[in-house]
Length: 171
Image 1: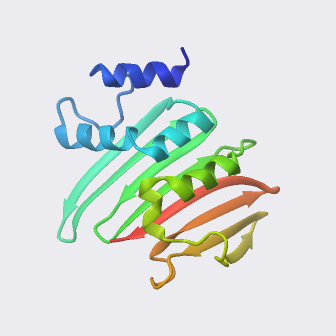
Image 2: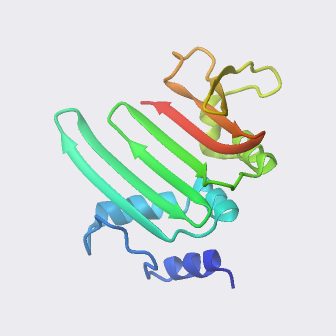
């Protein structure tokens, strides 16, 4: 059994194989958030490509603007983070140094995953905004009819290999 399969099995049985820094025992809102994220398609894609989490951290806060949460997973070959702010949600899958993401599987996720459908990007017609810095080329695809920067997907490549996927959703 792989580490990812073991972790998932333990989670299904109610055991938490990975205690997150910042998570207090019995904290239902954090446990519910983690269960939702860890049952999601992006988490499964991350674990399949970069390995089961070796550590994680969580933060939950509330202020005059609303509730914010952050969950960061360190994976053997990269990282996955979920940041939810009152006005925006950002999910980032990042391959670590020397690692790369399987672009075909990422594109399949972006075309078919239910939570990626919200972007309404026609991948056959979409023309990305391209930028390059420090040897990293980023293609940004924004949802038609939305303000640029508020609702879209960014794909970053280094040395021709896909290394980062970022989903940004304006709320």
